[in-house]
Image (tube, rainbow, N blue to C red):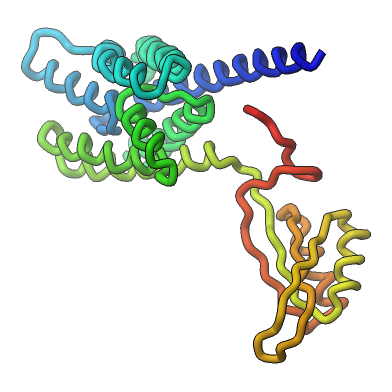
Length: 296
């Protein structure tokens, strides 16, 4: 019975990951074809190289090298490296992501749109591409290219964030775009890459923001009971000592949703106006009352 549940959970995760990869590559392809490539914005990565090749081929060759073709061909040797370093499971997902990205680049190549405002193009392009890359990364895959290089570096240096590694690797490609387009477009591209990296980080880290509360008060028992009864949130008493008074006391620690922070402040003000209250942001919280644990 347990094996059946485990097998079903594994299949469910595989389906979810495939959905993330499909949605992510579609968003990235749409961002490239709608907001970046038509305006000469070098976004970095293999697709950035593809934009350069397309422009150069249109200038000096009788044919234009399409973005979907260059993306597929350039990624072949990088996928071979992935097989050696990251293993078959990683390669399988990355192969799927690379093929899907090339497919969606082909299907959306006529979707160009000009808002008339370069800032809007960069803003929406960065949001869409960042969301797409973030979804692909949460499925333990990459779209190939410099994404793959960044993932390999992060594999050996886990303290380095993949999206921010991408920012520095892609900067080299963007700077090369100065010689093909112009300086202003390269500057726009840097902004676009920053937005893409920032959005990818948000997707990978999650949007389930909460607040962590630290309360130092002589009335800690009353405050703890009130929070437990009114908000039904768990409260932890941490041993602490005031270094000026050398007095031992309990410091209350509690995690609440953003909308509950107002009520916490009211409770503290009513029960002990002299209490010391610290509120800080918490990016993700797992456990009862918040987000359930998941293997996805």
